[in-house]
Image (cartoon, rainbow, N blue to C red; front, side, top):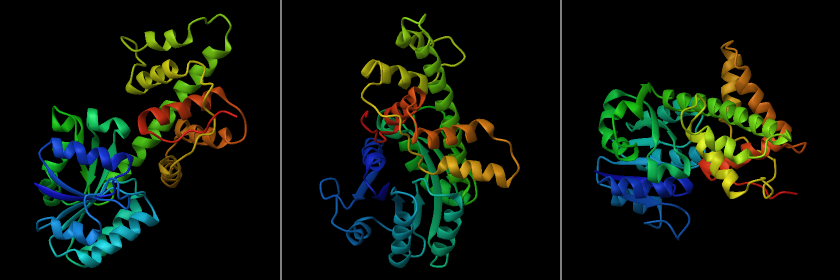
Length: 294
């Protein structure tokens, strides 16, 4: 299979390599000349065989809007665009309508795996027409972890459903990280705890709180035992806010996710060991930038 990939940042760069290892021929474009395969979107489209499949992996919002609009003016009827970024599900519906007016197909795909996806594979949540999902299955199969497809890939529903599922996934992620971080702060504050990193390490096997996030927490403490080199300022990239907004709109109680989001707001005002850990965890799984300790 032959596809085009627009956006070779932290996620897209590794996805290109994993796709190639999985037998998918990929032509990538990025504005960074050090990583791009071609010099322009036009060169990319000329290099990909028709009917084209173009995967967009750029920041959500205006950048994605610009890329989708450009593709709408340059692709041909029957081509397929997949937005694998973190777009809001309502934007997917707008993009789908824009492309459909030109006879161009559209799928949205939530992608989880962060900077570890190259090694471990990516969890994928796709929204769109069943025929378009079927067409893209070789791409999804190359990106996801080995094993049963249903364990790491789902066709969630129509356009927008993939990113809606990813939004809720990230909201849950907020709550999980906050719980681990608050536990860290409680343990760190008690003088009878003499081996804080070892406590978390001992939870990695056999306990009900074991998880990949816990593994990353242990890794963060091994690299910086007291989190001395990291500030407690924690950014939020949008999905947590959208999850809370959807909870409010649908009258669904989501106190843990909401509190985790508000804790990130609070981190920008006061010093907090818990928020240092949230910042460290975001860096561990997603490569998100941290701020040096003040």
